[in-house]
Each structure stands twice: as structure tokens, then as C-alpha cells.
Length: 211
Image (tube, rainbow, N blue to C red):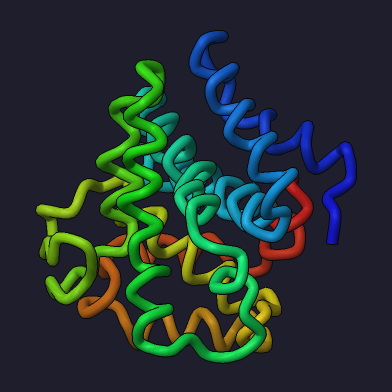
């Protein structure tokens, strides 16, 4: 589905950034809207969730901005994945899974080519690491995973579970929250899961609409 113009504007709306940084973000997001609109919409929603979550975590403005920026760009590397893999309607085979897992490294490379986004590259790379050390690409564990990446991992997973995808149906909000709690301490940082679940109580509709 092609995003509306309002979607394009909202992708650039939060957080407020310095002009050179916002220009760099905007160019990447425009590219995503044109070539992979579903990926662009997912990054927008993940950014909204991350923005709300960091307010509850009381991280301070500079770190909160980094978290939200990481969320807004966390899947930008999927623009480097072949469309026949990215849009495959069924489960990926082993070869395709290996290709898909490269997207976080591709994203890092794309961001590090832009001086304004150089520091965000390693954070995007780490968004698929797991708390128990079995994630990818570097098998980082626990607090060794950068905090912005840990926050984005929870927001990313929640949005992926609650929205229909080419390869899977959506699940109800409560079921997604239950899954996050089930994976707390293995896939996800337990403290972030707790804060996220508290945030989502009664607020999902408003967050999904950007309120």
C-alpha cells in the first residue's frame, strides 16, 4: 500500500533534529517510502512507540533523541535486500534468512556513509541482538547491547507482531504483550519489557495514531 503524503511528513516529524541531520534522515526515509513503503511505515510506527517509551524511561533529551532516531532508521538496511526476499509471501528458506539477517549490517553501512548519522550506524547494527547473547550479527549479550538498540528491539517486535505481514498474520495486542513478557530475559531486556507493557496499557490506539 502506498503511504499518503501525511505519512511522509510524519516520518520526518519526530524528534526535532539539527537541519543537516534531519536532511540526511529525510533523504533516507524518502527513499524508503518510494522503494519499500511497508518498511517505511513500520519504521514510522516503531519510532512513535520508541518516542513514547523513552519519555517513561526518563533517559534525558540527548539519549532519548538517539533512541528515537535509531527506531526511525532501524530497518533502513532492508532497502538493500532483494525485493523477492523482502516481499516473499511465505516463510523464508535458510539461504533467504541469511540474506535477510544482513539488513542490520547493510543499515550500518548506509548510515556510516553519512557523517550526520555516523553514530547511529552501530546502534542499528545491534537492534537484532538478544539479551541472552544468541542474536545477530555479533552475539552481544545483556547490557553490552547498546541501550537504544535494546529499546528499539522491543518496539520493533511489538509492531511486527501486531501488524499483518506478507509472511504472517497479526496477533492481538494482549497476545503480543504476553509474548514480550515470555521472552523477557532471553530475547529482550527485562526492564524495558516491563516499562513497555506498562506504557501500552490502554494507550495503543492513541500511540498508533501518533498521539
